[in-house]
Amino acid sequence: MAEFVFKDLVAKSGYASDFYISSAATSTEEIGNPVHHGTRNKLAQFHISTAGKYAVQMKRSDYEKYDYLIGMDDWNIKNINRIIGQDSENKVYKLLDFTNHSRAIADPWYTGDFDKTYEDIKEGCEAFLEYLKHQGEIF
Image 1 (cartoon, rainbow, N blue to C red):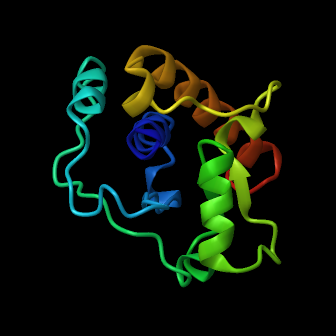
Image 2 (tube, helix red, strand yellow):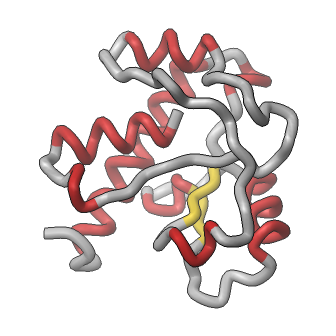
């Protein structure tokens, strides 16, 4: 969900050409599957498409490819660190680390609450974009 919310946010903010945004699974259960129907339905309410997206596995080489590796919860962060080995460049964060209340985003696959997850992700994405502006990484 976060990939598509952030893509939509940066496009609406005029920054789409400044970013390469993607997502990958930190576990193997959903590899090859399309976006969960609950996520698709929630994002469709905001005219955000997930067309063509299928789950892929995160790879060690992603560490060099991306400036930031962002997880939703502590389990994601643990798995990201297991995959990459060492975060020597301080690239790994939880999405809500960029807000005033760093915490985990609940996985709607377990909770069924796609509304709450969307709101948390939207808040995190907005805060992350502001962080990047403040850091001078985008203008």
